[in-house]
Length: 116
Image 1: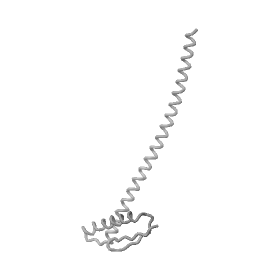
Image 2: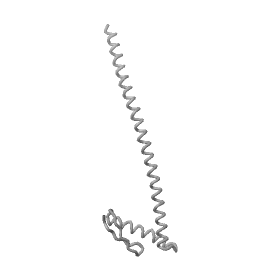
Image 3: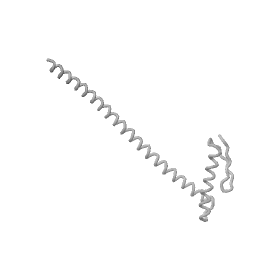
C-alpha cells in the first residue's frame, strides 16, 4: 500500500492506496478541476461543489454499471445463440454425412445392377 498526499481546494489529504501515486494525483487534479468549474461559474462553496461533483460521479458510475449489465446480458444472449447455432450446425453435418453415405450406397447398388 502506498501513502499518497494530495491537495484539493487547498486542503491536504493523505490516502492509502494500492494505486500508483501518479494515478491518484491525476484523480485529484480532475476532482479539483471539476470543483473549480462549479465554484468559478456559481456562488457554490467548494464543499457544495464537491458534493455536486460526487453526485455527478455516482450518476456516471450508475449509468456505466447499467450499460455494463446490459452488455453482459447481450453477451450471454450471443453465447447462447452461438451454442444453439453450433448444435444445429453439428446436426446438419451429421445429416450431410448420412446423406453422403446413402448416396455412396445407392451408387454401389446402381453399379452392381449395371454390372449384371
